[in-house]
Structures are given as C-alpha cells and as structure tokens.
Length: 286
Image 1 (tube, one colour):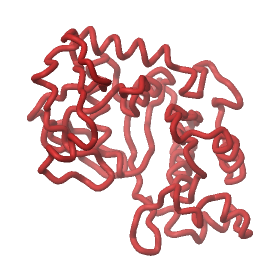
Image 2 (cartoon, helix red, strand yellow):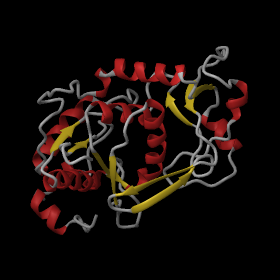
Image 3 (cartoon, helix red, strand yellow):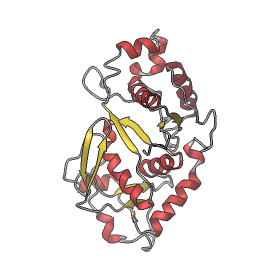
C-alpha cells in the first residue's frame, strides 16, 4: 500500500448460517486493523451460493454484526460508491472476468466430478482445502476454445506447475506454496453457472479497492491461488493478514453448524459483546 493510498479493509460473511464467535474474532481483527491504519471498513455480502443461502441469514448477519459492535462505511444496507455490495448483484463483473481469462487461455473446461477427483487423487491435502487436481481434463480440453463437452462442466484455472508463489503475510510471516504440488488447477466457474469463491473474491476486492484482506489462516493456500488470478487479470495484489482459527473444546475449528457458539445463541444466554471479547477463548490472540 502506498503512502497516498487510504487503507480499506472488509468484512465478507456468507449468509449460509448464523455467524459464530470465530467469525466475530476474525472480523474484529479486521476492524481493529482498519482503525489502527486510519482506514475504512467495507461490508460485502457473499451470497452467491444459492443452494445454502437464506434471506433470514442475511438479516441475522446484519443484526448480529451491529450487536457485536461492528461499524462499516459501505455495505448492502448503507450503499457506497462501489455498490452493489451483494455478490448476487455483481454477476456482470464476474462474467467479464471469466471472458478475460478465457480470451487469455488461462482456463479450460473440466467435466470431472468430486468423486472422480477423490478417486484419482493419491497425495494428501490440508484439512479443509481441496485436493490437488490431477489434471485429467488438461489434455482433453487443452484450451479455452476446445470443443464443448457434452456434459456439464466447470472452468478451471491452469496453474504454472512448479512455480513457487510467495508472499509475506502480515501475521503469519513469509509463505511459500508450490503450484501443482501444494495446490492444483482450481475451479473459477462452477457447472451450475456460478462464479467460484476464488474468482469472485479477487474481482470484488479489486473493484472495491481493498488494500488488506483479513481472514482465517485456513485460507493461506487460497491466497496463492488468488495471487495467480491477480497476475492473470493484471490486478495488483492486496496485502494479507491471516488470523489463527478459533477452536472448540475438542480442538476442532468452529463451523456454522456449531449452534452453541453462534452469536445468536450466546446473546440469548445473556452474554455481552464486551464479555465475549474479554473472556472468550483467547479472543485477541491473533
């Protein structure tokens, strides 16, 4: 970030369940980073997953964030110069980005199912991350202009095998991931005609002028993918700050299915945002 560029951070929840304490902790770090840098905080509603998205979760998300003490200057409820802030309203941006990747021959069609990939993969992969794609359809459909397959297909980004993608994380330090080994060709557009997380995230963070992305450490590998996408698009990469994951009593990562740790449940039990920040599970241990 240049000295003349104002810090812009973001909160980017998905309305696929109620927010839990782990979300609140990561988002709180994002808000603190924005305050420390005299910057702005933007709220983006990542509502692209129509199979899991529910309107009740959007309303609850806004209410829970306000209750916990979050404040944002741009978002779906307040507007802003980079609207819309609901991803479902930004499809024209994603379609343009997909066409740019297709024209540059960065992507190819892939007809493999999840089952096909799981059966073909032998190398282990990090918990929560996708397996390294074995490249089955690289040979079948070597270019973006290859004949259309008869089956439904995803668009995959072709990674530069053997290249080390490195970046310095603001919290975790120097990171290195080898394309083709630590991560493989990844989906940028799904067979149900929806942009994948990697593409939508890069397009929106760039369009909304986000200068630093604060999120959980489980997405460190995704950062390598997104850096490659930025390069393909000709976008500058933002800075990154990955937080430790908040764990449950058994040492597992919190998930939206853990209702006992949802902000809604904790609020109903009489907890306050102040008590959760002061006493909750190493809340400020980033």
